[in-house]
Length: 456
Image 1 (cartoon, helix red, strand yellow):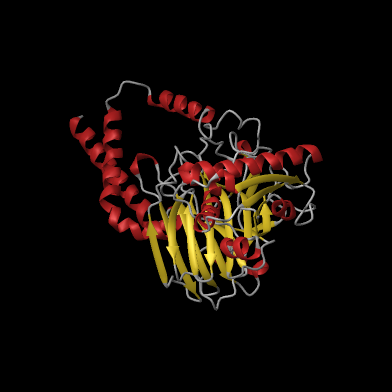
Image 2: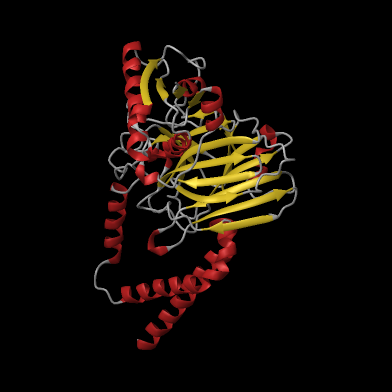
């Protein structure tokens, strides 16, 4: 009996170690390319992980508890708890998902004290999926995979849940100038596997984006050129996530690549993040929440006609893993606060953001406020009037009152957080009475929700 048990244990060890090795050596299914590059440095960890599983298996041989009964209990518990519903049917049901999400922890303005991101001057594309029904794939997108619009309890708005192994292409983005910013919210399921692929944001030149958007599913760089930014969260148990950066120039392999850890993105504790990407001619900056991941002076090729944005997901190792994106916002232009405020006498920004129907400033506004405060500090004799504006949603009187409250909030932030003397700041609000764009589109409304600074 002892010999049979020993032989059984040895065979189980071999099988489990072999399985662990297969998980590393078959990245086409479970690990995206940057994780594969890191795998050789993590072989010892992976083998240890395999042995841990073996030890757990051996231990279970001597347990008197009914293992099957315990697994059924755990399975029932996992279905009734967690951060997000993890399959497409449940995630698309906003009612059933409402009790399944950990409360969102709000960041403060001061917590973004190192955040220097400044959005582009004019909003040209907004995607909040408001026009799409829950359970549908969004009408203005295309994919060679699957996906659907869902809600996530504890988080505002609608989200696009990305299916496995595919490219997700917003067809309404047709051109990217030399100065632009792209912002979006990114979330994962709470137990997202380290062995699942990263979410990749692609900026590329394609001869026919509508026809050939799927070239970027598996790094088909011999048919297109551009850059890819990958984001993968840190996992439970100390597994390090990473951010990757690749440049492709009409060849299958990347001609430049880097990767690094991103402490701001950790499951399950912090699996909803704000991603901000900033292009200034050839320069690229990438932020996850307030953490600056990349600041690369020569990332974009000035001779490449970037006419394509997409999100690429290269496979989930667990059926329950999912990426979600929401609140995509593309803005163009390079704001020159100093020149416009001091020379022209007026600076307008859509980069100071507020909670919905509120005068509470969102923390990602820190970079813009810091920039304005810097100009006022350098020009100590200048006084400005801060004027709030809203879109046309809601009634006139409410919008007027809200715009005044928002201008007061900006004044308070400049004084309290940046040391600008309040005597140099006056406030006013115009509500919806002076629109910068038509209020008939999401982009127009985004441009109308602005704050102006007028030199006095």
